[in-house]
Amino acid sequence: MILIGGGIMSAHLGVMLKRLDPSLSIDLYEAAPELARESSDGWNNAGTGHAGLCELNYTPPPTVTGEPVDVSKAIEIFTRFEQSRQFWSYAVAHGLAPRPAEWIRTVPHLSFARGAAPTAFLRARHAALVAHPFFRDMEFTSERDAIRRWAPLLVEGRTAEPIAATKIAAGTDVNFGELSRRLLTWLGAQDDCQVFTGHRVTHLTRAATGWDLTVRPTASGDSHSVRARFVFIGAGGGTIPLLRATGLPVAQGLGAFPIAGQWLVCENPAIVSRHFAKAYGPPPPDSGALGGPHLDVRHLQGKRVLLFGPFATWTTKFLHGIGRGTDLPYSIRPDNLPTLLRTGRHNAILVRFLVQQALQSMDSRLRALRDFYPGMQAADWRLVDAGIRVQPLKKADAGRLTFGTEVVTAPDGSLAALLGASPGASVSANIALQVVQTCFPDTLGSADGYARMKAMLPSFDVDLGHSSNASAYARRSAEIDDLLQLRPTLAFA
Ligand SMILES: Cc1cc2nc3c(=O)[nH]c(=O)nc-3n(C[C@H](O)[C@H](O)[C@H](O)COP(=O)(O)OP(=O)(O)OC[C@H]3O[C@@H](n4cnc5c(N)ncnc54)[C@H](O)[C@@H]3O)c2cc1C
Image (cartoon, rainbow, N blue to C red; front, side, top):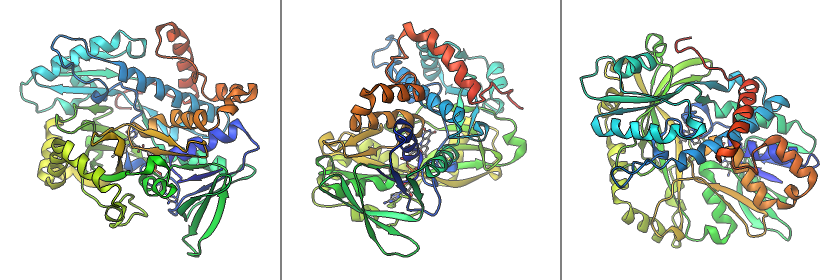
């Protein structure tokens, strides 16, 4: 088996496959000199354990006034995140990802709304969510003093507009880069498994059984060929060019469009020590499903910092580290040019939003921050790069943009690839499960394989979101919290 890319996705799939069948031989090739330094790196994503607790894009406002808020997407993302928590607690218990306090923490998740209509929506969303056991502990308030206790920076210096917030104490902040490196260190130490850094996969062709890959080590520059019975392309921004090289039907007409992210960062301890939450606002109306701005406490490289964003900006690179400015132009071919043009035509509002984002000045970014944190001082904030999302543009979508993540596979199950960036890292265990279910169905059909998967993901064949499973879920969830050492943290501890 060969895994391409050393980020969170390959880490989960590699470990899951090896635990399912310890006799497997698995090699992983990572082009960069270090593992998990692209999108999975702590600075390159928001580290939010996406569970529908604070992100307003999972609960769109009703199209008909007075209708209840549809919370089905929030329940779905919660269920998928719970599978990640199950897998991570298994990894901790079995020594595959030690010292969880270094890569996952409890951080309250807040949603924040300003103005009469958004605060009314937040109230209605809260009413719909608390009816489900997953969200029972969510609190709502429109009282300034209560919001001040939860997140003082959101309130100080604010004019008398209506505001409201919801809070769940048991949200998480995850350093997906640290977690990936721990899982891959374990994988690389197993019999018949190797993890290579500085090795770029440049091409794939069909072999009689499986695939032949061309691999170029950075050190020597001399390419060689390796054969694999099964290939997973978990190359983040590098996935689409490799998928196109396979010639599979799904790659026909497939285009790619990169959107780079940026954060405003504050490292001033006097400010940082006063915000202990991930506070999400509503997505701008014309931003598609790119998500809303948020003010987050993060723990990166042993330091507590605040991040605000993300802001979108232009790039023609598909990856920061090993990407080139020619990635986008070289990806355009006669078969995918119509897909790109059709997508641009159908999404004029989103294109306008991206142009505005890319052209905005530092002042306008700071204004967006001031909407959240009225008392902010520009001198406390600097702009840094976040990860690059490479949006797949599929011919079959006829110009419509789909923002989720999608596992695509060869019809014979010999290859799988992950397209899309969001919800992403939070659902990596579920993505690995989907690959196993599609490409290795016999493994789960055997009594041994089933028992091994049950040990890693106890809910993999259970509908956790169904109310009849609520008490089993609550019991199991408390055990997971213990293993992951997740404890409600005092706000300013
Ligand atoms: C701004 C931003 C914020 C985000 N916030 C969140 C969040 O809060 N929560 C969340 O769950 N998700 C978030 N995400 C999404 C999340 O970061 C990604 O879904 C996830 O990191 C993708 O992991 P990956 O392993 O697929 O890709 P990556 O981490 O990018 O790893 C791919 C690896 O493949 C390597 N590679 C590429 N091409 C080749 C090749 N040809 N040969 C060998 N190696 C190759 C790359 O060097 C890289 O190391 C965010 C993303 C962005 C951009």
